[in-house]
Length: 202
Ligand SMILES: NC(=O)c1ccc[n+]([C@@H]2O[C@H](COP(=O)([O-])OP(=O)(O)OC[C@H]3O[C@@H](n4cnc5c(N)ncnc54)[C@H](O)[C@@H]3O)[C@@H](O)[C@H]2O)c1
Image (tube, rainbow, N blue to C red; front, side, top):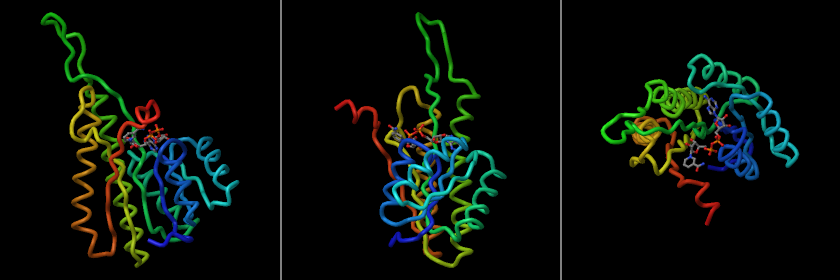
């Protein structure tokens, strides 16, 4: 996709991988809608991008909350015009073993709260933002791209029942959307990074 002046939404865009993705897309001419939880972090990220000559605007959102996501995507279109792409990057971890036992005694278990918290952000968040992005792209009548950020943990990783299940779900969403959305000119893909901290240690 030619990126000049195309509006791309990046969730979790205030820091980390999301910010780096936004910066790279901005350097190639895209206008960035940064979506994240903290207004302060978003303003900081947007102003750093603006200092590089990149058009970036901030939108406070909780990707796990349907009305928050709908409002944010409506606001993007009102303030920046129709979107052409969305990077579903926002994600969290809350690691724990399913069951931790010693000498036959169960000491700890992953709580239902931890399970749901991670599924809500990492899977439901991708569903909600992907749905709104596809809706806006189809309404605009042009082609678009949705990129979902998964993880190599999607194949299963000890201590990450919640995270691994969510990321495997993200892959399933990507394949499903590829089959459903191609007819509207929307391409869908997944990037599954390795642990970036480990890369830095090398
Ligand atoms: N860092 C890694 O090693 C690594 C490896 C594989 C995959 N990933 C994936 O890459 C993505 C980004 O990871 P990161 O390391 O940059 O994380 P990070 O914690 O540095 O940044 C995540 C961003 O998402 C935002 N966010 C979290 N919950 C949110 C919510 N409910 N609504 C809106 N925004 C929310 C946070 O505020 C934060 O700005 C995640 O999906 C993560 O699972 C990261």
